[in-house]
Length: 115
Length: 331
Image (cartoon, rainbow over all chains, first blue to last red; front, side, top):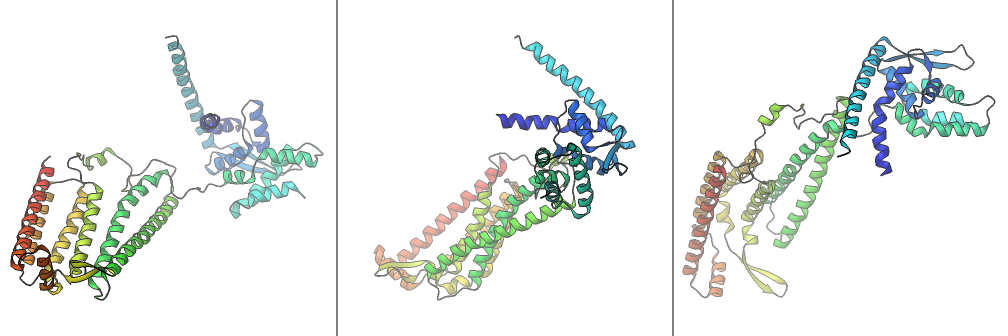
């Protein structure tokens, strides 16, 4: 039962992670700062998922990266590309629309319950 | 021992050469970000614990697929496998039977030959099955990698996207008309069996008697020289039977044309049977003497019964078969 619930939860979260990461990359950020930011907002993210995800987004052209060597520790910064910004806006709109529809469906179900 | 270096090595050694350096640098800076100022070995362990298994992390970085044949090609792969395996197995059986007919050795005993045929038949089917399975899998695994696509919609066996048009080319097969697969392959195997028996008749069919060493072959029923002289018509019948089986395999249901084909074949087989069995030299005289002794009738009477009875039986069977074909085609 728990494994089933887990796999369903993972399925639910799968798409949202990309959206959450894209939302934080309006300004350049490096890997760990992104983890902290997301965790502060309550979005738990597996580190072994995040770093590969960033690279994949870069390969797909949604983000660009640059190494900053000015600090004592070199850091790789990621930021949305022009295409990434467009895609992010579209995804965000889609997500909001969908949540609204889903809310309606879920509320409807609540109204039926008394019968 | 520097656990961080080991961890990074464990991740990068699983990755393609060209990405290693960049990923190693990024991981190193990330791990150091996570550590507090003036960290201890204990801190390092906690952080690495949080990063999780290096294999899992490497898996995330890799974008090559971890399966041989993905959802897009799986359906086509399975249906092709189901289609090709029985055909290949049957062809291997027919080839085997043909080899025995052509290159037969008169000195092999009946029992030995049967055992040899069965053993070689089973072995041949296993080998052919493995070959088909292997090559088809290799072809699909290559296709999966060459024509990589994020689309996971299954393709049809013709390797195209499904459209409503596909339905128009798929016949709706009523149960009464349908030809089950086992009928087709049973038919092919039957052809292989009777053809083998026909050309080995002087070794297989005959008069046996219980002797001190088990069954003893006393006399062949038929003269092989007489049987062999009819080889052209037998080859034509074998060819027609195989064609009918393949026709059934393709159509998957009885049609009018198929019923006519079947009728024609039945007529040819019956005529050939009558011509061969009426050949006065067909039955071996020793065999007839032995058999007439058993039934206590004269040889001439026995011959009349055997020929008359088998022609009658054959005719009945042929007529039923022909009508059955037309009946199924009409439904």
